[in-house]
Image (cartoon, rainbow, N blue to C red; front, side, top):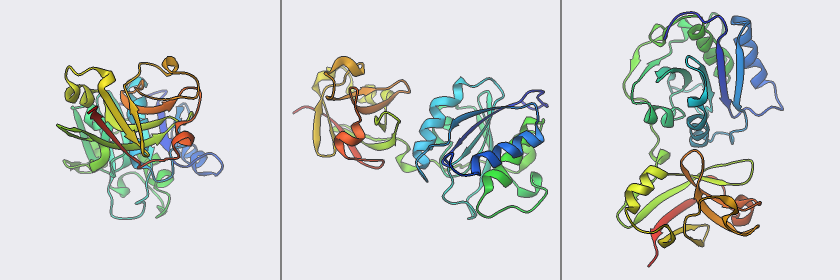
Length: 271
């Protein structure tokens, strides 16, 4: 996948928000190195330090980017610590990110991946801030990849990238134990329960025999779309990214249930 790209594409995911200078500084480094680049903002509104939520958004967006896109994913509560910075090739795309699980869904979907620990001296010419690796380490690394470097040029291979325990729900015979990992702009509560895991567990049982528990409330049945229930009523469905979500038709499930990321979600058969 190496070779300099005349018009490289960078896709950026962070928890920086847009009120401060952080996202702009990262883009400035990229454009200084690659003036003809296109930059796609996947999101800068990941909940602060929500690694799993960031992993979900990245895992839902990356495959729609053109081949060779360099992704920069920075949700990095361990910045400045001993956690490894990674450069990875997965499928048709390139990634730079902290080794904290934010690449978890990508690497789970793309079986053909290789990851390398970025050695700072291979990408950064100046001082690296201990608190802003997005600007001083990951952006220069991404630019190197766009200019033709291979991930293997940036450091030694990594065989054991971090996969957080709560990346996927726990499936057992009696039910599936998951949690809310992301709240989207509409207030939908996205969980780490995937449709593939659910279908393997459900077998031939009818969808209406499924009970979902969240925030002390029991919801029966799996819907196909939001308007399947009256306006203002809650429902459970699988969203477009293949994750189970709890929603309110034309409303906010986050407000309705008063819950947030980390809230347990239990899926069982009705008794």
